[in-house]
Length: 198
Image (tube, rainbow, N blue to C red):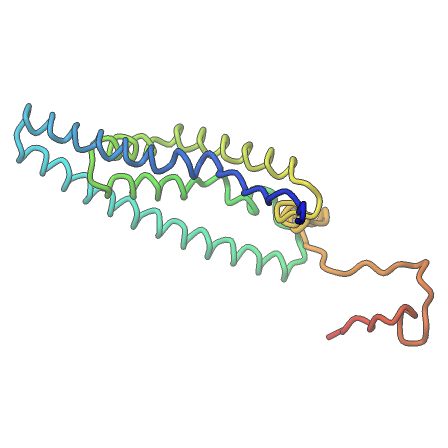
């Protein structure tokens, strides 16, 4: 008879995987209930007009946000080309896109397109610029905290290292060469191939 090792532990489910389906089901039930309440109070035609109006406004907002994103990308590309030709470093405002919260604007449009009164209210709330700015700052702080708490060797740590830039704004790519390793005529003696150069 073998004693054997203890059975492997199954990984714990994250809270998001546990509560997200329940939250979506509750939101769907609440949306349907609210639509029936408004339909009983104001009539079915009013609810239909609200849903169609929200969808039309949402499509308009998404198209506008897409145009702004494309214009911002083109402007950033032109600024990078001009900076590369003149040798000047891009400013911090140029690199951050001047604080534009286009993602939240697009999310607001998508929430307006989704049928339902709660999603329409959330989408309209995201169309207010101070709300978008506050949410953007909160999201940036949350991402920075998460990146700072990343253990060494994780994907977040690699992303943080990739964001390191020289003071003039240029990204430095290279490799570490140890000075204390014995060197032969073709690179390190420990059997590793020398790095390929273009």
